[in-house]
Length: 178
Image 1: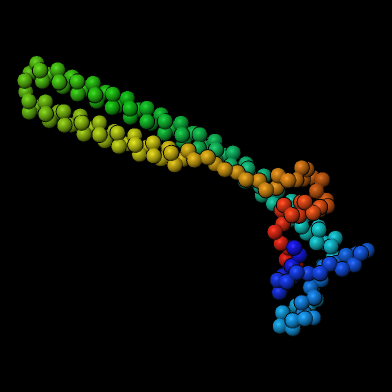
Image 2: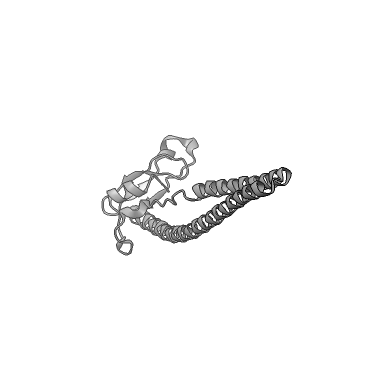
């Protein structure tokens, strides 16, 4: 997994007491531009641990942001639901108005006035229904779950992260370029 940041080829681990990673590509491919880059395993581990700790801090910040977004989303959903209820109540009032118009028509027999008033009420009801549909559609879009993924959950205790093991590196590190 440890690769040279210059040529991109894998680096070779050498030494038992003070292991180091070294790029030997320059010995075999002159055009690679590598000059035997090397880094001690201890220093490499320190860099990786520091990087993981930074990622954990970012993840914690993102989780706080996600909680805030979820709370805002709930408030927005509540507002949308309240507005839908208001519009539905307006439709109910308009329907009652239409019923009243029918009663007046029966009493007055003024067809022109009845037709005009009925069309007006029907138009308002249709407009309210469109508004409800638009709110419901926006509600559907906003009600998509807010997803949070934490790849750093493989670490039990951040404060005690002082060394790396194979499992941890395999889970968190795709490749290391030096």
